Image 1 (cartoon, helix red, strand yellow):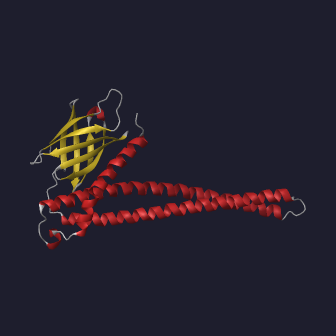
Image 2 (cartoon, one colour):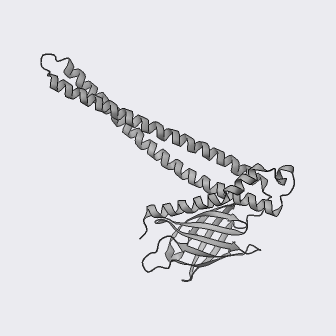
Image 3 (cartoon, helix red, strand yellow):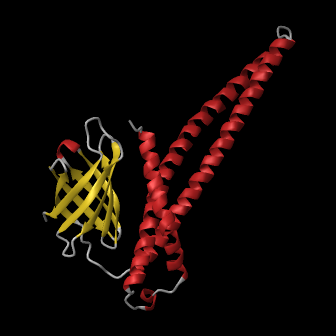
Length: 267
């Protein structure tokens, strides 16, 4: 059975693959002066290129946000370790000071042992300090990247023509081949799609993904198991139905690894 770490690695791999695939488009979009910047309506090809670049940047932004949370967690842990190391240093220094003034009772060997303890405590403080500084610099770098990505995403969104956000709303879902009935609650913002789902015996949780050029890509995130399936779909031209396929990240005993799904707009 695939572990949570393996599933996370696979999600990361998929996202990075998407980012690599659209990176040339992102560079091309930013290097040229699009018609939208001149106050004109972008042509369809240019809109597709902007949409692809935007999807990659938004996926990278989500990955960076996850890395920010992890870097902050590690820094908090190191801050606790630094406080403990500082206290150990204070204790070691105090013990040495108290022994050193007892000139008649203290021995060279006992004083040497206490001095070694003091040196070890100092070394520990330095190690934790260096590690903490490294984590802090990584956190600063990630925050800077997040801000830069936000500016680039906003710029690309401004270049896209205004379009109806077809996916926002409630969808009645049929999950096949088992024929399970459920509900998707989707919220579309440009190319970014998020939402919640309830899917009978498959549980409930959240959805996140992208919608570019009429093609929908979602990751299903179970409330208990985490990321457990990826979905692809195509929206009908009138926006009333989505048809697609799904692939499970992890095969539960007796389960089905893949299938199809259909969603009809409820409201």
